[in-house]
Image (cartoon, rainbow, N blue to C red; front, side):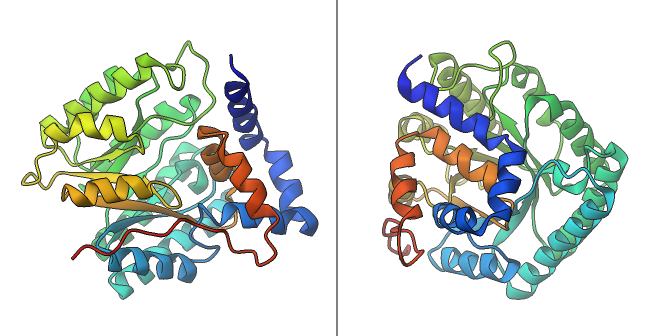
Length: 324
């Protein structure tokens, strides 16, 4: 294992350290520089801030996914309160005419407290997003929660046809899960997978096996004409997949993360492919930001620059020009 691989593994472990996350949030001396690192990748701390950022992305010709960050909520009352934030997000997005979907971690809504509680809160959000004309996307979490997530998704699909779900190319089980998901309505979002997983259940990050798996699953999705999001910043992968992207199908999109993917945006724009930008917001950004940095440990140097900036505003690369 190289030094960079060891660094990435260490940062993913930090991402899962909930005690450290709480200590940073409680200490002003740590919280502010940590937030300066986070805001490169995060669209704001509140619903209005996130919707303002979404409006800028929409104005450049791209749709958005809005994700109120939080995971592993272990208190039923807190899960209910957090569900209200998602409902407010859906209502305000509809009122503003935002071109976007709403994404969530089911554990944010209490699924790890009780799966029926998670389903009940997710059902409330499904009803709200259906009324607001928005897609609702369920994120994937660690492999120990995959069965729970797919069970909840299946229950929701019995009532709704706008509920999407995320699958991770890294997981060996995706070879069996994906064909079953193709029988359900709703968009399928394909990611490589950023969680710290043993090789008994997942392909190693950066491996040829993972690349081959992603290409195979993405090709299956694109050729099926099922609604899908090809969520990757890997330009080589996107280049190989372009011949499967039929612009007249209307079924696919390429999804990139806020703060990343400027080159991918330009390439997809030049080839007239639909692009969605994933905007996370809120105060529970610890896991998300550390996973973004861990994906490319060289980003740690940029994080150091951002943390020590006097004005608190990261030097984010210039965005592409709007589509004409």
